Length: 532
Image 1 (tube, rainbow, N blue to C red):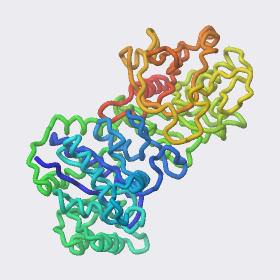
Image 2 (image 1 turned 120 degrees about the horizontal axis):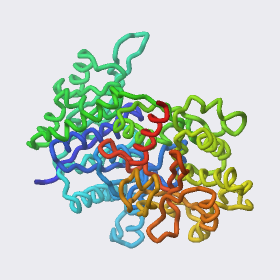
Image 3 (image 1 turned 90 degrees about the vertical axis):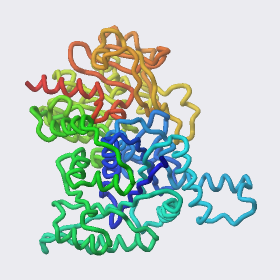
Image 4 (image 1 turned 180 degrees about the vertical axis):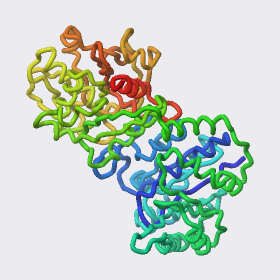
């Protein structure tokens, strides 16, 4: 069977949730046991997301193969429960870089190199390479940005040409605002966006409409009439309690069967998979317990900076039948004054990753508060490094201990830059990245949580635990919970006699609704027990 294609394009405005829609399509196809893979196009000229500021772009998502990709890949993996690879990420930087490289090598035989056909052909080639190497039943392509942007115009032309070669279903995600002064859903902006797609030579087979309230029949009829499609192909995507309800909401409208018909696929529904998904969603929507988790971070003004952390807490909450309410705490707020004011109502504390020295002392104060007040604590990457610094200062007696990232002249450099990183002057793709295996220590809490000796988690960092201080910190009571397989790098540290676990890795990146991170599961469970 030839691979079928679905292309998801957004019109009118960004931020409508193309990533969630694309992931919901992957999930529905999986319910019918079809192998579906996503491809994401991003129009920026960066080669990848590795050098992007999380304040501007949101979280940088890291894959097993060290690829630093758009945060939508996190959504894809969390829905599909599948490890993805960097070749599924196509950026403007990759496309232009490849074309220019070929031109310099003379591969175009003296032609005038142009957007069409050379750049569009390159995009099609990258897509077809995935098809040939993976042989999926369906490839779902998400086109980043908004129809009408210069940045994605050449890629939209490429998928138009792709449809001339391969069976392709186009889906337009749009928006129907409801103005309070008018009191009705307005479709005119969606009509304008649709017209831009028609001008690009693309006529969508389905229109998915985002809205705050359920799409009413009058608005549905208008959209269908203007788009020249039947009303049953206008799909509601109104606000829900959790994003994981969307595949079920689509199926309630019969979208799964309509999509399979458009793709000429006739698979049967795997009711066991569907029931498992429903069960997890039900525990998110109707939990038995509720806890407050304080995330002490550096980028709390933009919640997308910690998207995977937030979702990993949702997954662990569903596993523990618990609603996890997040209190976002800007770390600089804890640098002055009594941390108790901010943290006394919190059931557990989490410090995520980050770079730079802003707010570091506030994070350390938050970690100390957790340790001294027996609050469950989970540290991720930077959160592990600062847990080490706090323990060195306040338990081991290493006054003013620090990381060389924040103080190169510190007397006790308990966290330092690896020798292999000291000569690196390029920023992209030069950190300790991707999946690294770890051996967990016997008797450690980390070993009990994971239930096995050898694990693999993803990394993205430059600084490491300084083994020079391993002995003195262990003697003072800090538990080394795990190391790399060769024993050279510390991966986990723990407190004795209370839930305090941190890891140099980013376990949130591999957490999925169907398989939540063991660390997050244990953390939420400890918070529930601590509260009660």
